[in-house]
Image (cartoon, rainbow, N blue to C red):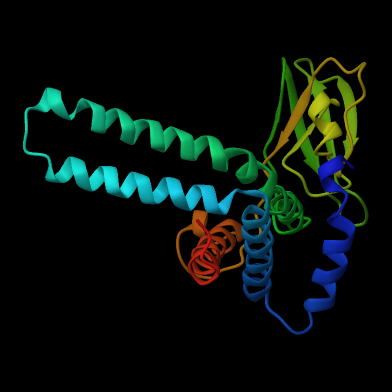
Amino acid sequence: MGLLDMPSPVLSALDNWLTPVLPSSAKLVLWAALGAFLCMELYRVLSPQKRIAEIKLAYARTQQSVADFEGEFQEAWPLLRRMLALALRRVALVFPATIAASLPLLLVVIWLDSRYGDVYPPPDASVGIKVSGDFKGRWVNLGNGVPHAQIVDRAGAAIADVPVTQAVSVIQKWRWWNVLIGNPAGYLPDDLPFDRIDLGLPRQQVLAVGPAWLRGWEGIFFAATILVALMLKSVRGIA
């Protein structure tokens, strides 16, 4: 478990508590609303709202001056430079607060991808396995325990038998970024002659209709996040 995975057990417990009363789609909308609320409120508190509002007003006035300008193009350069300076100043003001405020949403997204992402296929289904290097993989799932990825070399000699304890699309050797985001299925031993295994596991489908890329958790969650964030921005008067 990485640092950004720390809230996952609490989020999973709450999700389990909601499961008997809400379908997956409704829970995703709820998580999106919570993430958007936390992000927008953090941004409102951390950002200099008064200063941002002043810059927005100055930019609008300068923009109107440019629109009303009837002189030569060269004479409009001071106004255009001012517009650019105001725009860059606003970016500089909102950037630190935006990065800090996005952390709650990032934590939820990381958890959702493990919660509503890949799933095990039925025991009799085949799973494509790609292995780095000159090796081949075979999916073994007898339906009576943890599935395995059996790795062999070109001659067919067994190299490794990797248990897939969690439904994940990649199992690899430990990397520095796993300090932040861990792999729930664990990591490959350092002495193996290959670095990663890619598993073609199916993705959970939250929606029963629509194209395959839209049936997962991502479409509902991010659409709801954007809508709720825009609504809160208007209602709360966030600059």
